[in-house]
Length: 530
Image 1 (cartoon, one colour):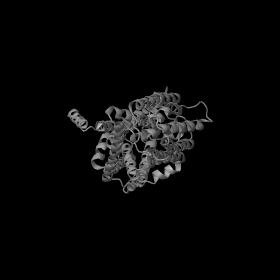
Image 2 (cartoon, helix red, strand yellow):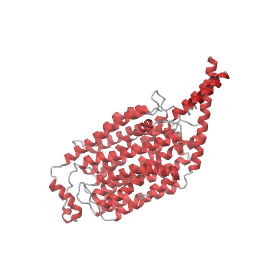
Image 3 (cartoon, helix red, strand yellow):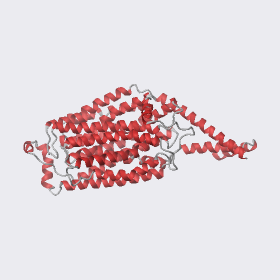
Image 4 (cartoon, helix red, strand yellow):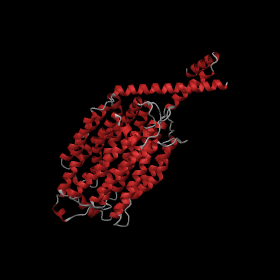
């Protein structure tokens, strides 16, 4: 059927002696075909998101407990490393976004060169984060330096990768589909990061150090550690250090492989034929993106909800091992959460297409709240904790999927309202990442500093009651309050499904007009040549 129609159109064009018509049809078909992404393209694009989630999950779940119990840093210094590292990371995001937006187009694209060139040094600095140096005086500087270096280099990977969503296709449907692939792989990345880091470290988990107060501790809280000390005396702190390095080495290898697949499997499309806007200064860029109302509100919504999820992520491992007494099972509990989130991604993708993205944010965020309350109110029970963790993972999946699904809508809305201002996609993505990472830095810094004030005992078999209370507040009460604030702001978010579809239609009309203009100019050139 397609062949016959094409032949008939070509025949009519020949009879009418319009040599440019067939070329225009071919160009239009070529443009339509180029906007479509194959399943292979989508998978390769999605794989590129795995390194950020694998390393982020490993750092988010395990860095705090690693600095406290393996590197044996004082909680105050650990809080400085976590906060300063994340704050520095947050600052680099808009800076890199600004530099990316001013980058020239190369034969590999504008985003992909940043991704490839940052990868080698990023994996090296990541590996050195998990190495305990053989000196004490400069240990804090060591971790702070390599943590900041890695965050900067990973920013050079992740900001261009996030903005690449806008350049793999001009079709919103294709971008949404690719985003769903990406979110699925990224959640699988968190599972992989949790499994690699947790299972390898869990097999070489050094025994806790019993203090004088442990003699009067409840047997239900101390039996695990006593059994560990008696039955597995061969495991030492050195074994735990080696396990962390082995896990980081495997993650580094996966990081490199994912970058290679992304580079060779994705073709970055050049922007539309409209000329890009004149380069602007850094502060002009800030004013531009934050001056767009829907974007500012969306960023504020996910700033608060991300802060709640970051508090949960950063402290849940410590809560399971110290407060619930599951020192040898916490890595499995984290794995259950991530597996549940992975399985729930297709459900949330269906939910947002059926009921709208705003409704999905409300449902996904609120679904976590009951389980956060249950896990701190019930007495320590491993089976109940597994069940609650699996149920909470369903809500965590919404936190992964929805922000990245809604950001392209805001960028499209900006393009509709500012048709002459183009080429700023990296700025929108980088400032969003800036706020989420800033939230992460604040959450980790405050939580670790709070543990210091509560009297956290490094590698202690039991902790003071103040530590248990602090951890309960950090993983339950504080996230619930932050979720509520974010959802209240979401109520005023103006882009509903009607507006989103209207923007999509207007942008498609603009692209069709540009394609027609391009086809007409090419046809004119061909006619002049004839």
